[in-house]
Length: 257
Length: 338
Image (cartoon, one colour):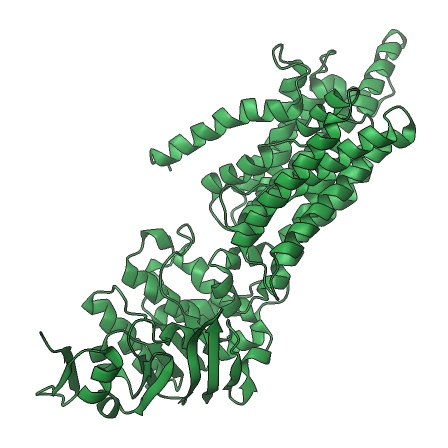
């Protein structure tokens, strides 16, 4: 279980996150939704351990994430960052192998087992064919898949994804979130994914948490969280929610005028 | 592992050594160098010539070649590491304090200890080394907020502290008439002590520094994705950066202390290596080290023998010869030749 317990995060004088709590259970996808600047990325960064909260704590299977050495933390939590500003000259294979950093000694010697783990992660994400290509030569979607492979090479129990479908086309959107579902439901990983697109959250997440100005405004099933009242309040605009005729899932849009 | 680049660099290094030992006022072809090194069994009338050759090779050419190779290796190896740590293409071994610190130390020693005594000669490299390491330490300390020293802050602190230290250096220089030329030569990489002493003195620091960089090169790869991703991947980022900065500065400071501020090698050789052999620092650091030694040997040999370049400080010649070569590499890359 990944537990975020009452964390408050400040950037200088600005409070980005206030008393936020949530739980990510193994085997589920929890979607983190909310307007721009509501604290989604901050929550991901605090949960992954790279920024320390002013109050509260984050635990992974009972261990305080911010008290762990980076290598031990990276074996518990893997982060899929947004695929922007990556070093272009690295190949996909070299990039995925960096996912093994947490398992190497201080001198960073890679063993055949590390190369196997990286190869398996690339098979899983269907990026094996890209292995020798440079990151700079890949499309946005391919780069994002390579970063997912790198995270899988970490063999962590929890996966934190920061807007993994931003700027992606429909096919890669489906590929990334389909893979996230598979990893949660078949492999038992706990997946926390910040999503900009509410309909993707409705479609793919098991549960959703709505952030509003740094506070968790609601947590529950997508149908419970994605209500016109809650979304209108959080986004500051009239939001309407209808049911999809085939799936029954909520479909969200802003009301015109 | 592809060995071809290592073979190419080693061949270049061998060629550089042959050129460096062979070229000079007395031209020594490889055969004569080998005979001089081997000594013995020669006709009586050739005995005197052999003795002279031996003296030239063992007392002048060989220590000079060893020293130049050591300096080139230290500057290019640490330059590659600095570019990786700071993730900045303009980074070189001097960006965060080694050059201005060494210059201040050297100038202080020249002005206050005096040049003539034996102590005065040893004081310059000692003070330069100390000045370099203290300046880097100051830059790191100032850039560090809490547990982290962000690279942008490091670079800006390096530039600011460097300007301040350079101002102090010029302030000291303005008070003296007699040491201006020596100081200028130090700052242009034209400082030189004769014999094996500088090789023996600099070798432990350069060897230790470069060895650490080679062994820890994978950390540099991880750092290319940014401090935050490196941390998420499980690297103890701040500790890795500190150890890498320390090792790179140690090697560069030892080189500069005995050779003066030779520019360009530490900036351009790593870039050239990256253009030719890719971004993996596990190859880049050792290849830059070898290539840097080779490049500086060839440059030094040219500087000692080419008519127009004779008696110019080595740092000036590296830029005169290195800049056009690097521009050629850049143009070829941008024209898509590889």
